[in-house]
Image (tube, rainbow, N blue to C red; front, side, top):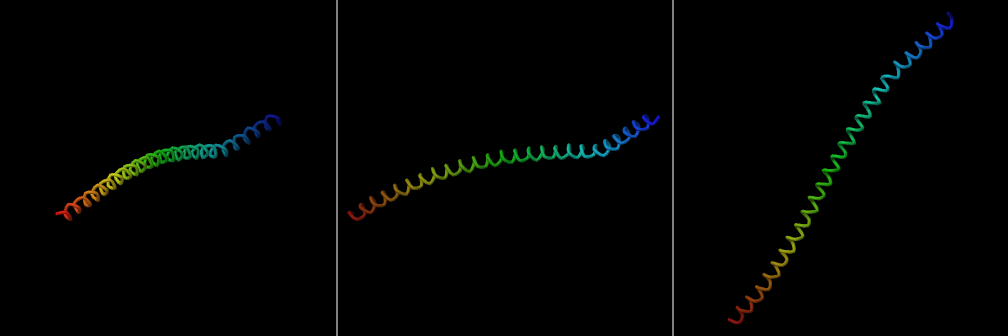
Length: 91
């Protein structure tokens, strides 16, 4: 009879401990899901930043090309000005 009471007490103790552990396990699961969601958002943000950097790089390249074209046009205009000045002086 004493053995059965000891077993019953042990089972009750295990039940109490299990009841105390269950919420902690649920909290850990929820925390893990939150971490996974945050990692996914960070990954998405990183992709967006990469895309923006690519866009900025392309815009900088286009600006450089436009700058070169403007410089060439200014040089041509300067040459034409010198030529026109020579024509005016010889007239």
